[in-house]
Length: 428
Image (cartoon, rainbow, N blue to C red; front, side, top):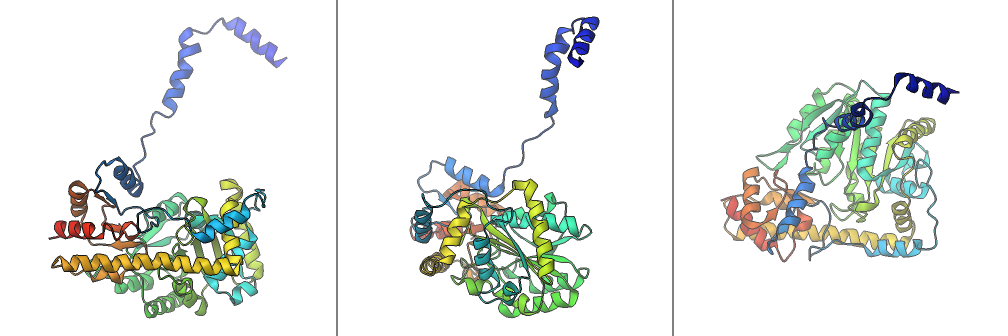
């Protein structure tokens, strides 16, 4: 009947003019997104694109944030290969629960909070599998906005650029705090402590648990204790992004020391974990978000809300990376192999730091390069200016981000002398 009435109305009005019938919808559709401008290129991904387009045989990419072996090639760990062998044809690929793999979460909490953690035993930790560290940060940012809408987040200067994007898109107001001291190329501890003291009581702070990105500058154990003490006085909430556990020093326990100090001092904390760097699972997006709560009942509530936030985002997390992580960390032999392999990756990077510094000093550089070996983790904050980085690219075909951040994973025994010579030339 409705269709009959619609047809009668069309007959009474007569045929629509051709431009309205054919052209108008097309024009309307074309103009609907006409105001959308191309997004600015990601500064890190843009470096890789430029490197790939360069035909020079001497080109070097020290911009990529992924591990490479001494031949500059990507690596799949032996423990991962074995875990995948066990998965193939033996396990199904059904949906995981919204909260993710229980086994993976259990093992992740042991890594972060300690094998014999009282908080795990008391079931005080709300934890869900996340889409690597980025997804863990985003879940927490949305949780913060939903349940503490008047709060803000203090983010270090500098930090991984995506941190700002994550909390911005979650609509959480941001403040920054001083972290890096350009003159010493080390930690601005005084500036950091001033920010902690001057922030309103109960503020949220983003902290890098180890191997700070992009500077490679970490507080000492004693400084972490002072930071924790001041946090306690101000009742601040620490949210740790731990993207490099094990990858920084080669020892996952040592790299979790900052978190353990805060736990000893009685803080409630949040923690984002990633298996991209320390297991080489970059494309598997395997991670964990955890929040230490006052008691088990609160943890149940918080976990349920984290799952509710995840539901409209991606429903449930991917299964393959979770299976790999679970198998490795649950099997004593595979875990031992992983610990050996992650130490091997860390040791290679530490060795390249020493080689780069020695080469620069042997060239007679008048500058101090102590910071190259004082810093830790994947990145070295070189102190080079954007103009000097531009010269490295145009004259030597060396690619890195314009803030002077060197990915030490891209430095090899085959290119370290070439890289040092180029750096020496542009920093004279």
